[in-house]
Length: 270
Image (tube, rainbow, N blue to C red; front, side, top):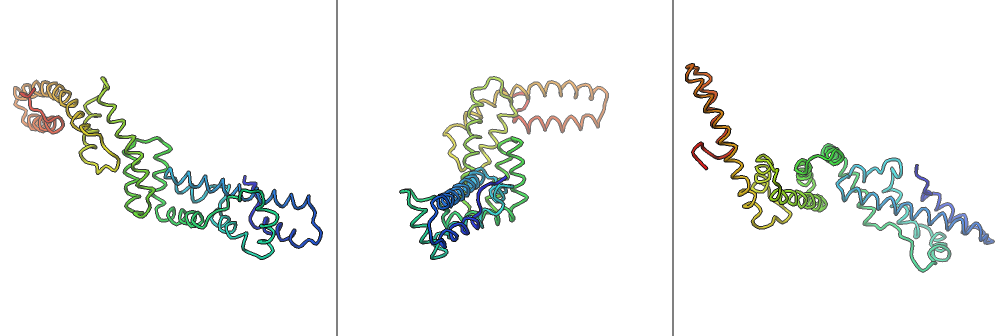
């Protein structure tokens, strides 16, 4: 539960002290403490919101759950507070902002950014929910990248999506590069990596020669798999021919073509 004093209560406390004809130092310290708690509470919430946004969790950035459901409004009010009233401006200069280091009030740019989170979350809610679920479930990087690319298409002016895509691509490229040194890597993993390297319009930098190295590693695995599958199919075709089972021969012909499609090898190839 949020315990940060509201901007409204801080404003009332400052005005109340400004109206006093005799200064009560205890009450003045209490007012200053309240102001500082409010400013730092809102600052923490803004930082959390920015962190959520940087990770692509715009729904959380927009809402911040039960802590600050109206963060943009609170930040806007706090940004304007010191100059919102002559009495407050005087108290701020004389009693609050006098410690040598200015309080970290929200900036106008931060207020505008906070307001934009809600608008973007509303426009792209389905995609944002899908991205959140994908991230929380730890789904494969390519699944999250597909969602991020759609978000980038829907929100082209937002640099954040490009940054998020680049970060995930860098991780994916790192994992692809690690396949080169794995002795237990499968033909399917290498083919998937090769397809990604060939098909994607990468934002992150792909190391020179990586595609060629993956291709060189997958070729013998394709050949071995093709030889094994063709051997099994040849025996099945021979048996079907002996039984003169035309429907089976047609089916095996399709399976033969499928082996070639998946491996790129014919039976007589090494």
